[in-house]
Length: 283
Image 1 (tube, rainbow, N blue to C red):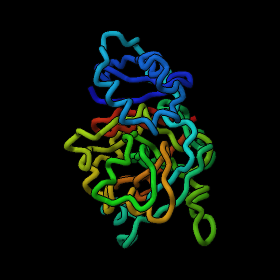
Image 2 (cartoon, one colour):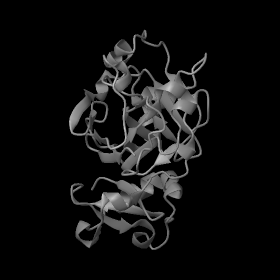
Image 3 (tube, rainbow, N blue to C red):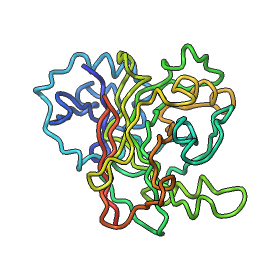
């Protein structure tokens, strides 16, 4: 059984069965309290969680609505993002391909739930569907060949961006423009991908009010997941539960002609193949 870890009212949950009709089993209860109920404490014990998940009976899980789930990684120690990491997206933004990952910080106070609202605070708010890495075993100087062993799992995410704030001044304010309240929804759970043969070529995209705006495969990344983890560990120490946004594909509103931004009432649905879907309403 694939390990999927969710957060239900502050308690870590195994998500079992069909993800279209998810069921939840409390981690602490299933482990006889040998594993913590705190979701953030689980990422350092990912291998133990995987072994326990393989023994679970999905029929014993309680039905759970995605709308009731909280952010699966509520208090990461660090939160990063990679800019211009898809070839077609770099082209639509009129930017050359970067020689190294372009990394900036997102602030943890911007985290949102899988179905949380996005507050539209300007007339230049944009959507950016992203694959989000959650670090398991941290460290420094991680070899790229072993980098996937340091990944707990993946989430679907939106790197919601206030373009006016982002590009205000020189140099631009990437971290601030992408860190307003609620501008970092992720989820609906963290999915282990250790046995997924497609993990480096997943379909990713989003719709706005049912209209497909982004649709790509993550093989269009300039820097893949393993490379990002390895590269970042040469500069900073990574810790269990760290969040890394990996870039958005072609089709953002800022790159369209004419440009199209989000407005109150819009519904943004983001799907990452093999992981799940998050749905966020603009208010």
